Image 1 (cartoon, helix red, strand yellow):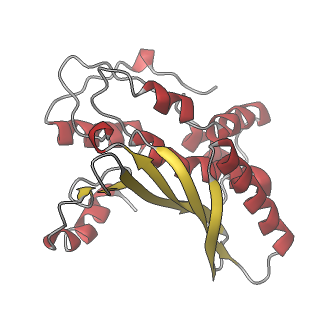
Image 2 (cartoon, one colour):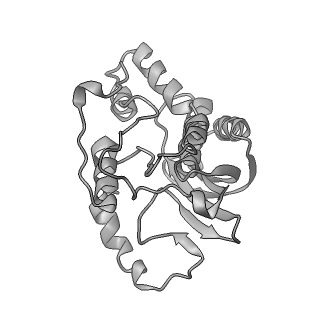
Length: 238
């Protein structure tokens, strides 16, 4: 769903008053919600799932899991556990689902998290992802807002995975290019998140469905500042 349509739908929900413990919620439309438990701990909660973007079931599960976990990393948090989210057609071999879940579990384990449960529904098209729970110190939360004039925009991964996977569905991409995109999508943002704890980081977001420009606009609008992007400096996949 596009950002404008999504904002229109969520506008009705933001009329309800949120408790003070909800540090990040619907009003800011950030990568994840954050709820303060005490002065030292806040819970990060997020969910993400989508239909297959690659043919290999295991790889799809790994890609979907890494994508869902990235929202916790974007908030400056540590992943604790995850819940499988599955939509599955009745006429599709259940062995394929086993491979998808195996890929997701392996990525979760790499992140130091555990798959603690899940939920399934019947659907015409397979879909997979995770509901993820993480932890962060209330004073170290990173959000889309907060960028300041003079800040440098740093990308943790090269751009182009969306274009390449779309071209793959149309059989219009080289296998080498697809392999590069898959490797990028399976790579966790864990190390990048650890680097974000250094002083001087003011705003962070996870670039996914809305693309670079969409997410850059969200950061700029929430930070009340402009953003200049030099095209020739952007890291791109082959």
